[in-house]
Image (cartoon, rainbow, N blue to C red; front, side, top):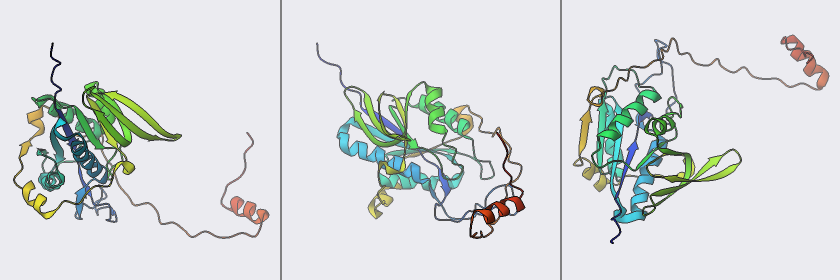
Length: 268
């Protein structure tokens, strides 16, 4: 009896358009959020995820059939998808939101990704995504997606290896006590940490080629999901400016300063 052929891997990489990491964040005049009239780029952790997907194909050669990137956001998010295509992804999916729509919350994003995965006729074997976005720092979407799908998950990955024949991913992750190695059966959700890799710069020829790669546009209604946020932001303010500190000559002066500030010791 001949062994069954190994199914080729399909990789999905969710990416997010966020305020560029080099921009100084400021609260908007209405205090409803931050000022978005600044430079945007791909979330750095998602950029690492795209790079890792491309490196997996370079290591596994023809075992990787496709790399798709997906984003959920306003029309300008298409620029982020084109960047990912220029880095080496094959196709893109844009779940487009109105420009005025509030950003979706992690659970909404995870629900939309679940619906999107279920639409893929060839299936998805690995989801690689950033561990968090630098705008909200939630760090929840990957874990929620794995829970909704009932898949294995490996978060904060600093090394990823895939055994195609055994359908297993070996992931080294950073924890407080050092490094932890996980063995996960595919399909799996992997979230990337900073030390996983250093993303490449897209070359000019690849940027030109990216313009011809397929980009599918969908709406939340096409996926049957509601991305209306469940939380309401009442007000956003900048933190108070720090006041300069002072030096004391000895412990007695320190205690006196603490008493002046209304800080006193309490018995347990």
